[in-house]
Length: 105
Image 1 (cartoon, rainbow, N blue to C red):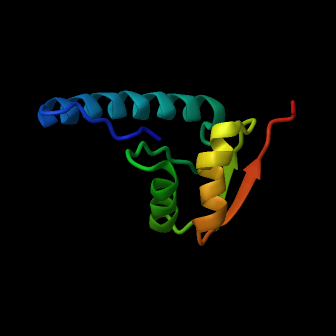
Image 2: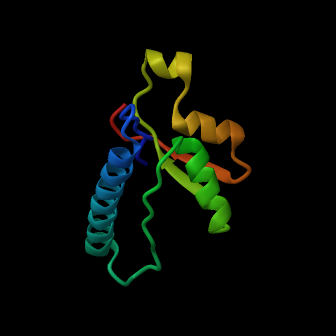
Image 3: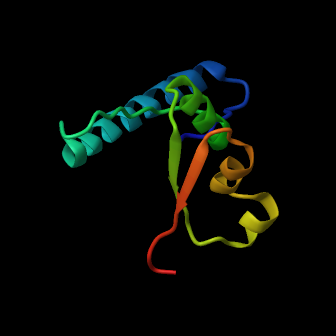
């Protein structure tokens, strides 16, 4: 998920820059998924910009998914004050959400 970027008074630069980095991210995700999943599974990779939680919910709605699986990180103080994407998803998504923590906690 890529955040929205603002470059002040030059919105055309923002559009060109966002188009470039989203294209690069899409190609990277496609290569990574192809290398790890190949043709064993039906998969698709999508690069979206905006609020991570909201964009994941919109993508889940668009693709009519049953379950959203998310990785978690070691919570820090800012997560307690501001919340994490996984926390937001658990509270707001109408989809089932499975949060997976890394083994080394």
